[in-house]
Image 1 (cartoon, rainbow, N blue to C red):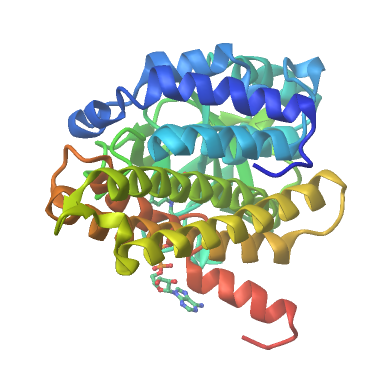
Image 2: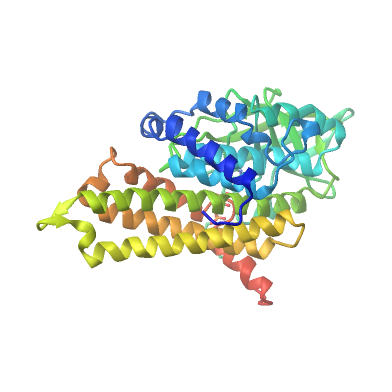
Length: 378
Ligand SMILES: Cc1cc2nc3c(=O)[nH]c(=O)nc-3n(C[C@H](O)[C@H](O)[C@H](O)COP(=O)(O)OP(=O)(O)OC[C@H]3O[C@@H](n4cnc5c(N)ncnc54)[C@H](O)[C@@H]3O)c2cc1C
């Protein structure tokens, strides 16, 4: 842990670490095996105040900074990536657009419950034919006498089908561009498709959504009509920092397990950690973790200080997620056959890590953002 975090930030990280040690690490293997969304623990995270860290006290939040939020996500990811993405997406993608672009009525309607962790919000940008190319959104919203009728479909939406999910913000094409709407759960025509069978993140909730003529009132429009696409792209910049923090926590979990195994597993008359081939993998993990930590908290600090951070968020996301995938692969290698068996946590880390290079902008999209920031016309 860096030395320049404040006492308050360190205290928060310690509280989340205690929660992870007592509630997450002992149960994460079972949640994964049973594809179970751990609703009790997610509610407990609400009681700890984790869903309200970054929102103002007037909405039930703690008026904390983004660095604190990233510390919480990192600590959770040391135990389980699924529960960490539930927080990261619930706040960074779910509640954040309502806070950033909602009017006072919309904020008052949704944020207190979301900050308390009594409700979850989802974020519906991706569609079957519009992922990296989010501007290709096909979902349409047409004006009615009293509001809007939305039709289309969304793909791979995190937190969209839990019994805690109360609202999903979706993008839809309107006359003058792409707009964003906050759609309450249970609105007729909003169909939550069956949960995906995923390679990893088994304890995170992910569904496709069908919007079959969903009728919402004027008050559902989030921000300015026609500005939804730009709004959501800005939200993704925030989300990229917290996904990078999640990747950092995953890599740290790989290091923790690899180090313990390298010290306790014997071969050829002693612990395998005395072989340079094993020790150097661990040294490389530690180096990548240090670099990831510096990049994640530099981007978070820029955001906290109101400075531009788009490029730094992309750099942090690219580096930390690729480092997490490398760390998981090497952790399995260090565990040998035991690493391929589901009882070992590193098998889960291996499956869980790959999505980090895909969600909230693939590695290729991060490279595009970085190259463009350097003036290249990609
Ligand atoms: C578990 C999970 C949870 C998710 N949660 C959410 C969520 O909560 N909300 C949400 O809106 N979305 C969510 N997503 C969707 C995720 O953000 C997209 O999958 C991701 O952005 C990639 O889009 P795509 O799958 O359509 O891939 P595509 O865009 O079809 O990309 C396919 C490949 O082509 C490459 N490619 C595409 N364009 C370019 C280019 N211009 N240059 C170079 N390479 C390119 C990509 O990098 C990738 O390798 C989630 C996905 C998963 C799997």
